[in-house]
Image 1 (cartoon, helix red, strand yellow):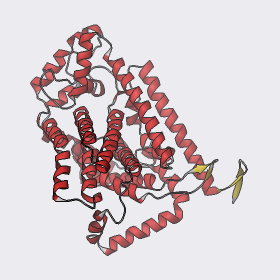
Image 2 (image 1 turned 135 degrees about the horizontal axis):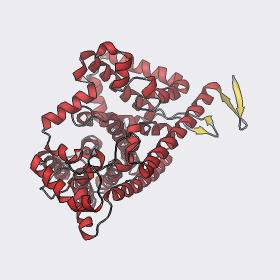
Image 3 (image 1 turned 90 degrees about the vertical axis):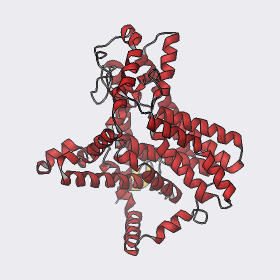
Image 4 (image 1 turned 60 degrees about the vertical axis):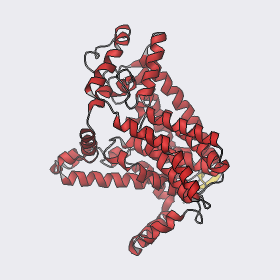
Length: 443
């Protein structure tokens, strides 16, 4: 059955694909618009979280080095020094900084998708989680832009062996880790594996050079992890902003902000909190298993959305492209980010986005410098395949064949069912409150 749309024949499945694309585009515009509206005209964000100094997303920016070296303190210290020169509204500064970084990121992402023939709209399904729509107060897009710069200059160093590129890339990586330590997990491991598996002429001397290349970022990460803060440091940091609280007051400054007080948490307490939040372990084993299933579904759907990428032209389904290299990079990123998925974070909306965006960025840099991982140069795939049981490999191939033959319907359906997508949160009970509502016996 076909219909005529704009003079082109289009099948029912193609029509379904384009309707989903239009819906997704509308959802993106709606969410971003609501986020900006609530930021400008209400004291809370899209999730009804009050945006005062006590809130985590504001107080996290206030972390500085006035009480000593701590993680995430470099931006707060810069804001603190600028405020000492001339007072200004820090909340406005944070908002403007992130809006600018978001616009730069969106332009960069669009250029990369266009250059590599990716369809931007279905990939942006990953951005459609309402929690992420507080982007106007997060550092995510800043560190993702810096990640692209790091990838770009690393590839230049890898290809041309120019020390200047290595130094510049190292400086960017160290600054990014000081901004947010999550940067380490979606940048350093994939670069290290590239050094080990792409260079076909690597010698003992080159391996030492590569290890030296990562020495400074690893050292920075170790410092950030070790000097994570104490109760005393949190108090000193909060006291250092008293002039700001008096000049631009609100009703929340009588207690230390959530982002600042989190510095005093021990690693064990933080890890337990994140693990319990991610898998709802305090609600029992069945709930934890259900959340684990949801997490695996999330990664599988994400992989599918990125690798199978239909491109509609004139509102009709053109063809899909499978990017095997991008799939390898995305798999590496999933593994590298496993600490963030379990004990170091409890926000899949952001951590999954880190994986996807960094994979696309790195793929683009490899392609621009003709360093793509191919079957001949990437020995990792061969070694991994040796340890995969034949039954699992057979099942995997059967799944891929089924996906290939049915992606016209399957792709838009997965967009609608995406677990952290605004519609998917209703259709798939990934949220713990919906789990409790539908399955009260799991409590």
